[in-house]
Length: 386
Image (cartoon, rainbow, N blue to C red; front, top):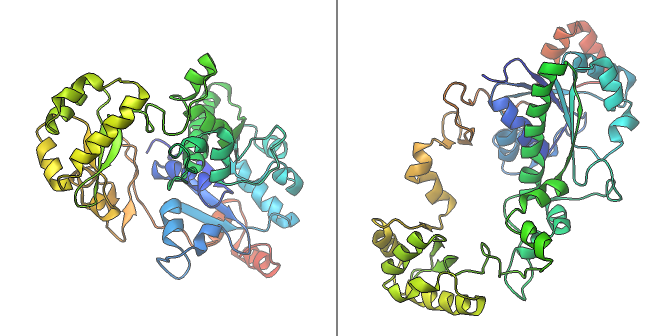
């Protein structure tokens, strides 16, 4: 496993941080969830549950990890945490800026204990700026980035996306990448560093098909008029006769030609890049045609054509789709779960164990830092650990 020699202390909860450390755990890193004494990761208590303690949501994000529960406000708890940090490679946290410093275990303190430590802080707005202390969730970061403005059609309110773009694309993925870059740099310098992940920053960086044109021209695009979001008939979702949906992504001329032939309208071929008003009319005409046949008929028509069309699947259909099955993205051993998505020929990601119970690995991890079972019992009695 590519990360088998790395130990990660994960103080995060809910989605962005746990997905980041899930990627590391799936590919071999020893990820230890450091959870609070009362509830641990809030995601544990969502519904539906897969057992008495863990939800399906929590289990999916926290497989292959260990758990220890420590009162980080207690001096003994801080001492235990610092001993764990001494043996760790990475710390990941998602508190608001300043929380770790107030606990007495901020980056400077941890770096003095372990100069090689890579410390990653995932926050909504970053460690600097006037918004750094504001609370927020995915929808708020999308709002400030300007991206949410485009989730909709003209004169309609924005639609809230069902996947958490800022949490995952703006937080988890760049955090995992930043950690890997810092570990690579450490191979040369021997020193760790602080990684400041702002979900807002990274959502802005995702807007590569929107922002560069605006920055070059200062022309503010309108919702529903972007090339890849409502502005072209060749890139749209159409309703079929049986109230299903067909997505079309025929941006290139060769794909558009095949699509137009498939719907029996070769006269549409020259209109690929027609002006916006013509695109709206073209979409209406195509919708009328697509509505004449059920989804399966259209899929049969396009099955031998080299064009970019696809059915809009339900989750049940996705689970049984031959491509998804072939890639083994949904596994069913022990219980159904999503497989590691990054396919590697030599060191693939694996599902080793279910998500831990709160504090499940405390005694094992304490033994590694020379804290005996008897001392662990005293710590439990004193309310420092579970």
